[in-house]
Length: 474
Length: 104
Image (cartoon, rainbow over all chains, first blue to last red; front, side, top):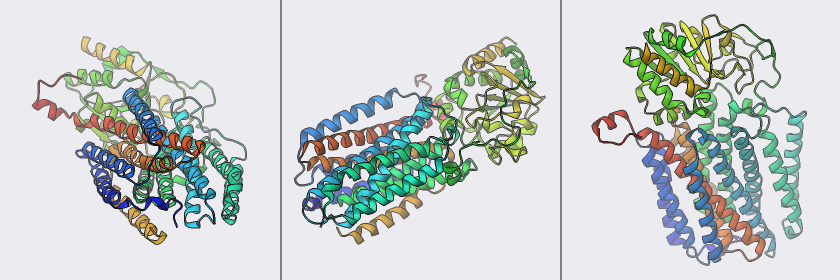
């Protein structure tokens, strides 16, 4: 028997509408995998969601309309405002935040369903209690983990890997404690009303686990973490569906759970990291070898905008390597202007896009597309690397770790094996960066000290605009 | 609905999720993650059900927050995805056909 069996009647229309919604979700996701249909696919999925909401409101016996309308109004207003205001550069943390509230909703629903079931006479049926507990734990982990991911990406807390001593042990103990508490709850499924405190304890412990699991992970790995938490939230939504006997939650939640898992693995592959590596080995946690920033000054060449302009204008081929610094400085338009000036001088300009340039796969493509950069000029890493030795000047703008030759040359480097854009193979390299400070991985970049590398210390936007002006004057 | 039916649906949906997402160009990883993120906003339906049947104040409050959270997840998720994908629509070739198009 369902604790909310009262829902079952009235189901026919709702079920029919749910099926329509599922078709829209699946088609929407399918279309989301192709650039030309992606926007339409997103719209289709959104309409599917509206259909599913309406269907749910048609269920018999739904009341408390004031609460429902109030919650919808508040949530919609916040969602609309937040997504209109957010800058394109801040997209990744926005996704983390939306993921977090989703997980939070699951945990809250699980709590409410626990109270509801516990208040009913007789045993709490196990085929609902177990999903309730699963949803509570995973939802809470996802909520708190996503909040930490948001805080890291928003630079509210350090993006560096934070090592907590004995952290793996603490996490393991927390997990054991959570499982033990769940077993106690299941064993006492007849008198759960007396055990609500323990249930809340499980929610809190899972929250701490979410915090501790994400805190030690460096900023460079955040996309993988967010994607993984996204899949978790999907799974927990499916579990909530089991608890509530709601097929829409099961189907949509599972779709996200499985597709999100696949996306996570694809992202991790693009960074040459395994998911377990991301989760359990803080990036550069224990630096070995000498490639790590020691604070000592190493010799490097520094140039001004005018010299950079001359180098660029007299080159035949230029490859621009954009990174997160470009995104932060909102320099995409200035860089596009600089490229336009170069093309007027007959220079071939291409953009080398690392799979994780920006802070998420595809983030840089979005930013450059916003600046009207020709889609065909955005070249993928595998595609452009063989051309590097024939490139006259590579301009690295606000990118760091993804150009670090240590990934190829130094097997002891924390980023060893990560695929990089091989700018060090180019004839000359200009790096536009505010300082020599290390990137997300927290390690020094050997590229900066190569003899054919010139450093231009400036804000990416100002530097690109200045270079564009200098090229015009040549 | 008995639990076997639910598990059947779960397993089938899992396979559909895997199949539908295979071979995504890296360019679309972020938008697609954002879209799947919006879809798990489906939990809001759970919030609607919980709130719709709540009897005491605590449950009503929980339901209210769950609905608000879910609505943020859904509305924000789909809108942000739409904004991201909007960047890909304005292709130079399309713009060339329509020289009158206003400069962004």
